[in-house]
Length: 77
Image (tube, rainbow, N blue to C red; front, side, top):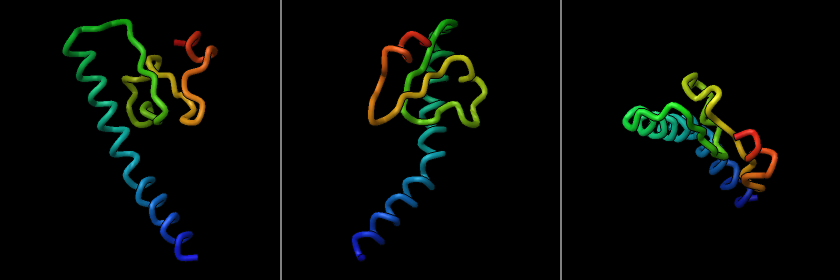
C-alpha cells in the first residue's frame, strides 16, 4: 500500500509539472525556429507541445512514448 501512495504522488507531481515542461520545450523550439528564420519545419515529440501554443499548429507531430515515431507519423511529417 505504501508503494502505491508513492506512485500516486509521483504521478500527481509529474502531471502538475507537465504544462511547465511542455511550455519550456515549445519555447525552445520556437526560439530556435525564429532565430534561424526557418519557414518549413516540423517538431516531433511525445509530449503535447501544441497545447496552449498556437504557433506549433501545423508544425507538430505527437508520438506515442511507448512506440516512438512510426512510419505513418513520419509520412505526416
